[in-house]
Length: 140
Image (cartoon, rainbow, N blue to C red; front, top):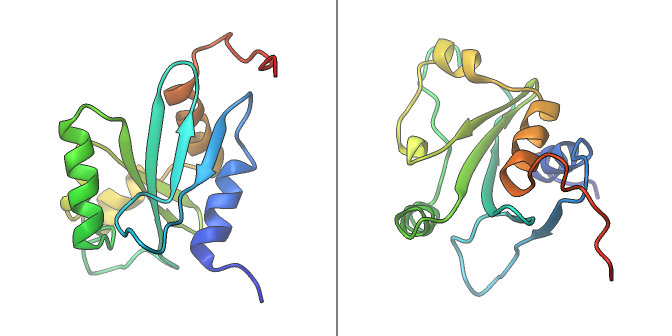
């Protein structure tokens, strides 16, 4: 049985991560709402909720399909000053949502204008958790 499209999308982002970026898939069947992946580095932590759609709607607005628990978790951590994001994947890449943008629907044209490649998204993740030049080997 193959991986679902969201998992495949996440793996395709991780394939472009450079340097030493620690990440862990967060899967807890007893607590819902926690983002899919936690990233960590000397600069910062980052929590990312991933979603995936097979195509950009041509007429309808686009909004990540977050559960109420996911919205609460993201909004609460954002209020605490945590580094959180949502990435909505599409076949050509993905759109990054920060600072509660995940509650604002985008028109299809605006969504398409914000699509970043998988490589660009991986670079953004790297830059959130690591500073330039700190890609050293962990001594353990």
